[in-house]
Every structure is written in C-alpha cells, then in structure tokens.
Length: 148
Image (cartoon, rainbow, N blue to C red; front, top):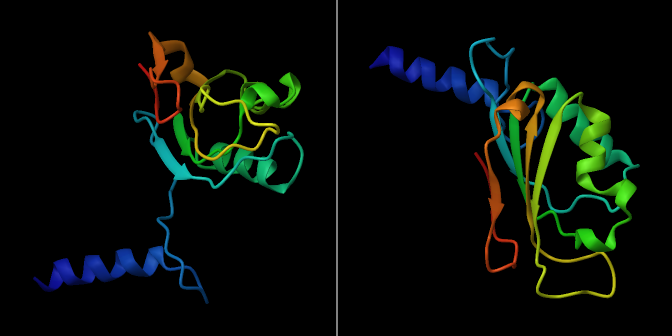
C-alpha cells in the first residue's frame, strides 16, 4: 500500500508545474516501437500561418514526437481561409510527411473565417503512410473526423 501511495505522489509531483496551479503529464522520449497519439482542445487556430500559437503548435507536435494528434475547437471556417494558410499547408511545411483531416460546419457560411467549433486530426510522418481511409461527420456540422 505504501509503495502505491509513493508512486501516486511521484506522479502528481511530476505533473505539477512550478509556481502554478496547472497540471500536465511530462512526456519523455518516445520508444521506437510505439505510436504516440495526442489530443487537445485548442480554443482556436490562427487564420494565418504566422504568429506565436502557430509556431507553438508546431514545436509541441515535433518535440513530443506525436504520430497522430487531434484538436477540437479549431474555430475556423476553413473555406474562408486563404489556401496557403490552411492547416494542411501548415503541416506540409512542418513535417516531411503529414495528412490533415478537418471537419467544420459546412452547413453555414459566415461572413468571416471565424466559426465556433470544428476538429482536425493530423497524422504525422511514418503513420501517414499507413492511412487507409478518412472521413468526418456526415451531417456536415463538423462534430468529428476520423482517420484509419
């Protein structure tokens, strides 16, 4: 029982960042025989491929060696974003090989690129070559996307 409590406390200690009330799990180096998947509610991606959040996302994906990563609340109507700034073009600049599957509300056409909701799923590097299918919410309102 003591051993279990010590392990639990060690886990909490590694998750708590200094001088904050935020918790996170620190990811170590990825084993070569595993796949790393991640997910985060990102509270919007910028409309343009410049800016701090864009470069922070790239570094987060790269430094943590994700093979696939899902994001919710991307908050864009991607048909209103210029092609060179869309997520698939960003990913192609970040990685040698990447696939982007995006779902957003296609039933409405807002006046600007801002639109609540939406999801994306990136498949990165070697995992990209194993894709056998993709899809998204058939209602067109952008609730989910999948990659097989």
